[in-house]
Length: 575
Image 1 (cartoon, rainbow, N blue to C red):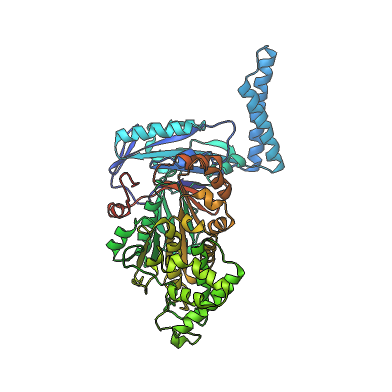
Image 2: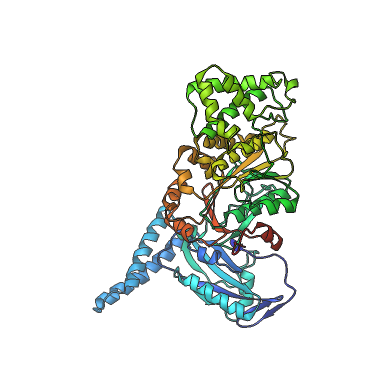
């Protein structure tokens, strides 16, 4: 039985044989046999060869040794080793440590074979190195031999037999070199990289949906990292990284590639980074905070459902709690609930869906209704809302909604909002986006939608805002939607129960470079090993770790020249 990794079945145009290599078509190849092995091996001890960042083919040929032959073979081996030990003792020489260790190992193996706990295999392991030029072949060969030496493997060239070596590493099951060694079951089982650094391939006979996106290049194996968020348990993702780690670059590439597949994308953009991307693809940009741009939070969604008016009232409770910075006391909440119903009634809107197409009232109308209420709590709440109705913050709400967010890419820019209004702007944008997602359309008619919340800490620092985002993360999957949460304040997000819940409800998790202050919280939340934590502390810009279930795949985000021009946000951005 033979196994080969990484070779094409197509035949070369020409094959030229020399004592030191073979020329295969327009390239060169040299074969080496593994002749020396360490006394003990650990799991995946062949991984340094299998994951070497070059075109290297590793072939393992196995032939089981019959039990009736294995026992006499081990008996003769033990006899030779024991006689060497006794000869040294009779002649007064010190025992050879290598012979002592080999004798003990042979005795242990003979015992396990006799009990049926192990079997022997006649094994040949060959490595064929490919290169475009002879100089490259020499360079790669030196690197491969160094990688093999790091795990005490001795590679010997198949001098004058490179043709047979090249054949032995083709996936045809032919061992033309026959440079074999006896290995037991345990050593062979540990040779296979069952915990590879690449994503697991589909099970045999399973046809994977052609919807995966290119996330980048595996920095360990140089393999391509393809990931399909829409095939996971939920469609949510979280991207945690410090400022300048390349997270926006990576997310913009993902947005572009989702647009290629017909996904509708909405982005909440605090720094106006996605506007060039939206302009390039013909999307819509809503510049909150610009003169004349207004959003009416009392607007009813266009796709009506029986409880639309009730849902709008509940949302207004959340919105006003965020405005005030805390949940109003019970008396003010009761007054607000009465005022919401009365304000819509004054505008001619009631429980009859036929009235829901009428112009919606404004926030100042709600404040006027509160002021007219005889309840002191209502008057107090109206006074607390004054900055948002007639004060410094009123420009965002003092008229009907000016821009209808429609299209395959909608970017809600918060760049022009003052810091005091950014949390509220994020909530307004999320509400508008969710109103378009939470529609009564059937699954067959509903298009996939991706919601990107950049700098999500702006919303998650507020209790009501965190709860709104958490509800959205929980309910998105059933509506063919996915939520992508991006934040640079990982420690603050992970320190709250709601923030941790949002992260836990993301089947796709991407970690990029972390700060030393937050690495402990990130390591605890994601169960990182010490090596993975060190990788995230020193990861170059654009590199990170894809956490998918139990798989941890280090990758580097890559884009074409055209994608790079759209995704780059500043000088020195990752490419």
